[in-house]
Length: 87
Length: 146
Image (tube, rainbow over all chains, first blue to last red; front, top):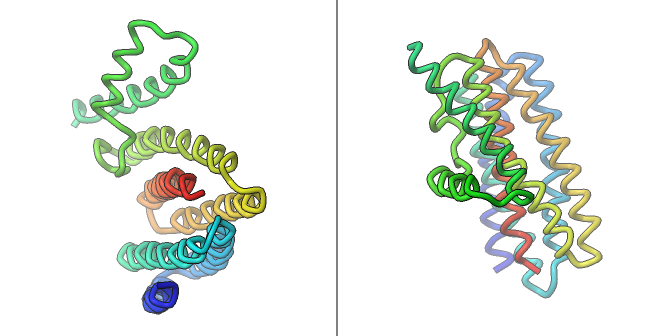
């Protein structure tokens, strides 16, 4: 189950990376710099947030942590895809 | 148009009043409370920032800001509750995650602020709304994990 979620997260990860690169290209220089900052901080937040689930009780904690990564990556991809349209 | 804007101003005023009344609720249970309860049932904390919000840039920003307030309250309550429920080793992780979320939220919404035109300011308000709502929902669900 954990492997399955990780594979799904990898696909979302790819989708997010593509959306991020497109948003970067679409923005002005100021926005580009800010987007890079925001994306770095998103990674820190994602890691910190999913680590919280990892510290939960029992073996389910690992599943929840993997699910956290999947969910967050999907959400971030959707947001970045919205940004492409806005620019 | 004028009527429209007035309606928006009234909605915004009602929303902010409802928050204030809420704060006084616990201390003063009276007839007004049931009215507020009815109002809350009819209008729960909205899921979308733009529903019921219309008008010029300033009105929109004010309206979205008013809609963010109840979610902000829910977020604070959910965070405290999640901290209280967390296992000891989870607590520091949750504090770190919440600090990281705040830093990320600020940087992410600042990105929208750098967009073109007056719409960018509306997008900042919308970003703040969306992120606060989503984080509140996550903490509300996550606090039941343990």
